[in-house]
Amino acid sequence: KEMKANKIFKGLTFLLIGSILLANTLEILEWSVWSNLIKLWPLLIVSLGFSFNNLL
Image 1 (cartoon, rainbow, N blue to C red):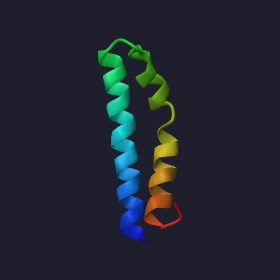
Image 2 (cartoon, rainbow, N blue to C red):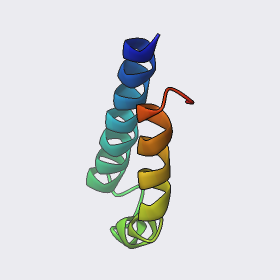
Image 3 (cartoon, one colour):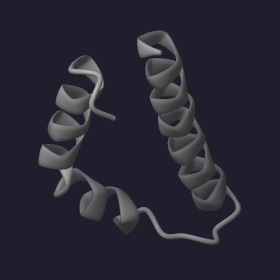
């Protein structure tokens, strides 16, 4: 179960980053999106903590 949760988390993370990069390349989104995502770095730490504790 732990491996499955980690694989899902990693897959969704790469999917999100790839989608944002594609949208930037196609000029659907502006590069300012990254500055907004950087403000949410504490959520990344919390998500990783849940993932490591099998709570996600």
